[in-house]
Length: 217
Ligand code: 3PG
Image (cartoon, rainbow, N blue to C red; front, side):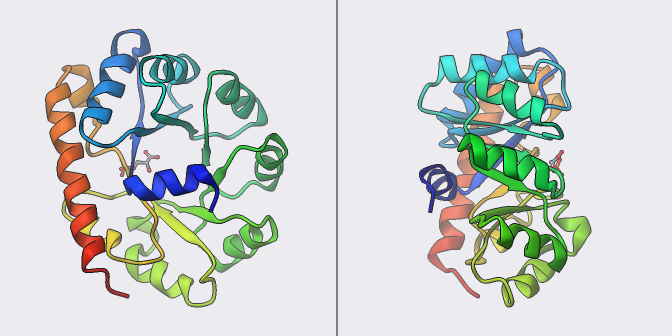
């Protein structure tokens, strides 16, 4: 696996972040995630200032993996890379974006939920795909069904992940990490509840590690 894919898989969780005030929140948030053992973040481009947030997080926590989410244009990829972004996440499968990311040498995780999407990902030789929106698209049962004909992929479900279902998802061998916003909600960030974010990250890591120890097919 690509080094960054391995690092994400080792952590097992990817916080999906929407920052409205990066100058105020990016640095304490990055520190709170790292303190909770989750040194990774997907900073979504649906919020203005994503580029700035990526830059600030990388400056404050250079060892943290910071990527860009909700990427829908090649311009977003350029901005993410210029800011120090290390991976790209897209809501759906856009061959132009996948080709562009590959050309730039940055890992890309496109949203895939159908056999047709998986075929497309196969053509591009991707190792990791996002499964989005996970719960609404059939959840774990569909991910397992898709891994039968497509065992080569590691899957990153995102959408509807919570402390309540994290264990079940993480116990599935084809799942490398779960994305989610439950540990970085707008309410937690707006109110600067950094310690709570750290605790949610710690708890999530415990759940992932516990699930992997008793990993079932
Ligand atoms: C998103 O794009 O917002 C992510 O999929 C996060 O989904 P969640 O808020 O259900 O975790």
